[in-house]
Image 1 (tube, helix red, strand yellow):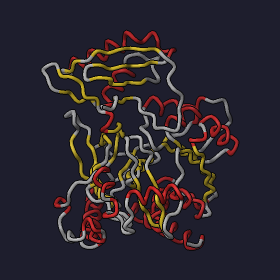
Image 2 (cartoon, helix red, strand yellow):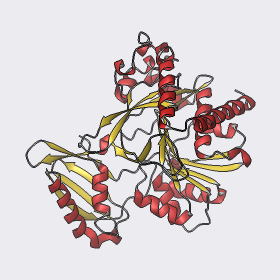
Image 3 (tube, one colour):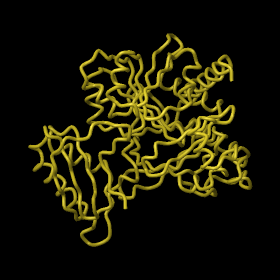
Length: 423
């Protein structure tokens, strides 16, 4: 596709996204738009892949729930190119996507890598939405945008094709310290990176001064947000996206808002019985790979408070972590007790003001290892007391082991402060 045509499609997507933002003023507006678009999608486009070929016009709740394992096992049934997961892997490794398409992959941190197929038109639509919600005034001046992630994607190439952005990708597989120096030398206006990388950059002695900062690819913990915003003097805005799509972008106030004008969300309950939810997503704008009632592996805390920006889209208070990071501890009365990452995180951070980093690892049903950095060594007793009280209140039984050690520096893998040993 020529650059001229790419620019037209990006600008068209940008204009459409801005138009929707101006049109959808109330919650009723959002729901009416979503329902109309979803009905149109289910009436035809959904049946263009083998997985759903006989399901046109059926209500959404009649579709089976999918997850990564079930989709990857029959990947050819969900994409219009008929690529198997193995073929997608090969295309991704070789960089030989079919003409007019991109094939990408997830980081594989959950143990199995997921793949996606997206058309050039969908790439440009994706960029148009990000620009409309994240950088609405991008057309006024040419911005230098630095993207620091573990893997490049043709999704990012679309930005350079707009000719209004000078985007440079910094591959974290080449070493974060090396790339940090390169980013500082390039002096971007906009910086997009995982929170652990933004935190490292905030602690370096440099003249780096981006005007806008976006975090992505990992959970943005409050302890990281505070340090990053204090150093750079601007609000950190999250981009919540994954292999499965683009789900939410934070407004200038730093609050995430779901892209309900492009996607329908259903919610499954918190495994611990708390207020968190896990999303099922149906993307009614994407047609190269059909995503219907796809179960995400994320835990979210929704926000029912009105945002100062006035957005009618559902707010997300925080992306807490992954379902894989929910600890399953022995219950005092038998069975297992689910403990979500946010509860553990708050108990540790609130125990002592010196704690600005930590790691929690469940090594057995009744064993937790907590590692604190050397400068927080005097906080061990407070953390022990805090976690003991927490577990007692949850009716869970676990031995808490406290360690003091230098925490591993950021690498190309996702930072997971709370995790459990995989069996």
